[in-house]
Image (tube, rainbow, N blue to C red; front, side, top):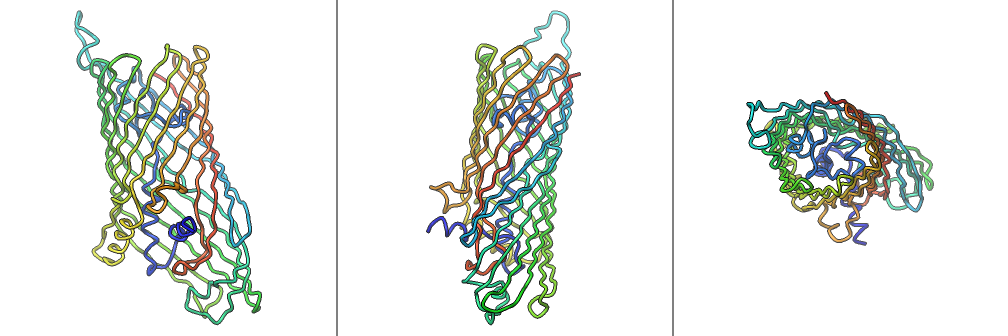
Amino acid sequence: MKKITMFLVVATVATTMNAYAQYSNDALRFSQTNYGSSARFKGMGNAQIGVGGDISSLGGNPAGLGLFTRSEFVLTPEFNQTSTNASFLGNNSSASKQQVNLNQLGVVFHMPTYRSKGQDTQKGLISAVIGLGYNRNNDYGVEANFSGVNNSTSVYNVFNDYSVPANSLQSANIVRSGSVSEFNISGALNISNQIYIGAALGLVSLNYDYNSTLDEDGIAQNYYINYNQTQDTKGSGVNAKLGVIFRPIPEFRIGANIQSPTWFNINDSFTEDSNDPNVLGSETYDFSYNLRTPLKASLGSSYVIGNRALISADIDFVDYSTIKFSSSDGGDTQIIANNNRDVRQLFQSAINYRIGGEVKVTDFISLRAGYGNNGSAYKDDKDEQYFATQFYSGGLGYRNKNYYFDVAYQRVNTHSTFSPYQLQGLEPVAEATNNKNNVFLTFGVRF
């Protein structure tokens, strides 16, 4: 029963302006981002905070840039395949969606400091590094198809029409797409090959689209209604990162990173329409608001074993109850207040953790594997962690003096809910398992 209650709480998708719960759940969606990374760190479960020396440091721990000893250019495309298995009104169904994206693109410039003849080259400020890079930190691509006989409610009930018997075949298709991406301007200092300090400014872009189509065919009474919902959300924001890596001995590193909240300005447009003009023609609701996502604090460490293997582990702390809405134009203060109340009531802090390893099987070839878990943000899911996200990954890489190739496979497992309409908790809900199969390919050139 507790799990069913949770389904009803989080089933909210695009709804009319009066059903303000849409925005608190969207705010959570836009706040659950991952650190951008190359195929190398993807293969290691993205455990990177205490490693460094990789283009991933642009969007992860910027202190890791301090471990670069040469300049680099790096490109990472990705292929995503998402499958969704849904249970709706006693029926099971499946759907899939594929796409190709640019996951990461960046360049790093290594600038060693000038040392006069006879000066100790291993003490003081050894080098400075600056980097520019794009990361795709979250992907919303998913498609779900489901159908079943509903003897409890009808979409007509949404419009306060109860003259139609609750006995119909309901078939729905829901498609989500979009992403959160980030352009980082980063810099780091290498002090005595022991202390690395870095900072980054992130310019964030948000794009989210939602399309829902419901076909309802009456059984007890012969009728047909089609109900459609479309949501188009775009936003831009800014954040900052400050990180450090300490290397007390050459084999061991420990890192810490603070990522500030992202301050977003978001424009949302929601449209609903029906083929029955007596119920609904076509209505569009526009809403603009400011959103502050949570701060993220991360710790990580890594250890090199015999110059042939590396093990790394990270942990993040994120308090989703600190998500904050504010008005962008001085209006709609009640919607803002209601959503801030929902955030406090529904969301909690969460722990994310990652662990990964890398083994050099030859001087040029490396094998990698990793695992990660992002904790559930919902208070009612504190014990079961039903809405946690799990990551499994593996990969291999080829590294030469002036260039390298890395490939990684990542599987992401999570649960979600879908509903073709909202009816104050009485709507039908599809319980879904989502599996993402992602392949990343990184090509890097040193110069």
